[in-house]
Amino acid sequence: MIVIRSPEELETLREANRIVARILQELADDIKPGISTEWLDQKAERLILKAHGRPAFKGYRGYPKTICASLNEQVVHGIPSPSVVLREGDIISIDIGIVYRGYVGDTAATYPVGEISEEKRRLIQVTRESLCKGIKQARVGKRLSDISHAVQAHVEKHGFSVVRDFVGHGIGQQMHEEPQIPNFGRPNQGPRLETGMVLAIEPMVNAGTYEVKVLDDRWTAVTKDGRPSAHFEHSIAVTNGEADILSLPPEGGTAARSVTHVRG
Image 1: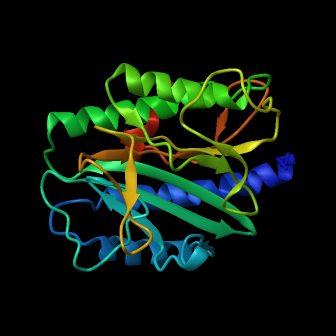
Image 2 (image 1 turned 90 degrees about the horizontal axis):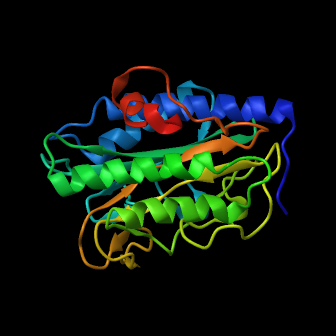
């Protein structure tokens, strides 16, 4: 069942998402060669607790950490570790969630570590743009698959592929609620969008094949061909006009620079 949120609920969801957006920004400003993903994870947990929330991911279905930190060919759910140290030329996708006053905030973005290849730069840019294209379709009267189709069309136009095994989702009092939101499909399918729906739209885009596999840790998903992957996510509310992006970060900083043109 798709839940329609009240104005009061939407304000709490906005607070939760602004908190994770701000924390993601603080993490992004620290991304550089020599930093371990464990260090980023510990900082994220401290900041979430300081904001009077709790990590949404830690303990969820047994996941052991606060953030997901996925490098290069890792698509999603990379587990932070002191032995995973960022190197010049890497890209890192950080996914972060918070439970705040009973509601969930969830956002993600992909960042360069120092100078990166042209392929990785284009991959990040196209993935970020595909999120923008999807969000533009999140309007009253549109159908759910209009979001999915917009993401897929933009990605494939640029020669990349959308992951099929993982999807976006509704979000509210639970991290994963109805409906599921694939990043591919025909337009004009599925339920019509209504005011008060809250959706986490999250394109996962691979430079090569869309096929992925999960490693022996049972969490980390990687591209089957070993080519890089990027991931962006915003939590949005459907309104009578443009979608209300709940997880916009504060102005300035690395995280803000990565998403400020999402309305463009």
